[in-house]
Amino acid sequence: MSSDCKGRVELRLQRQRWYGWETMARDTWDTKWSNRRAVVYATCKGTHNWRVWMYSDSAGAATAGNTKISC
Image (cartoon, rainbow, N blue to C red):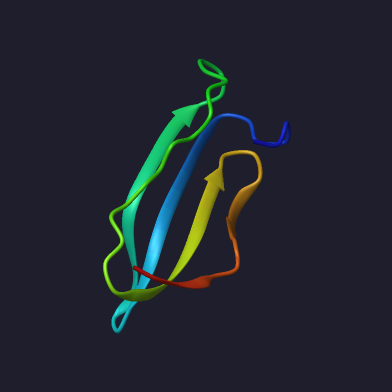
């Protein structure tokens, strides 16, 4: 996590579906009370595009590029 991310931080692991992005796992914590690392994992079945979405109170929202994974 960057030192620029202060306050509440949320991380989501998402896969693309025909109706949009589906959140498969999420983790939320407050950097004021914890400096732990985020842990998100999901069961993979089939072939989907996956991405990571992150939000922090101090830096706003950002989405990582997506990648296709077959399981």
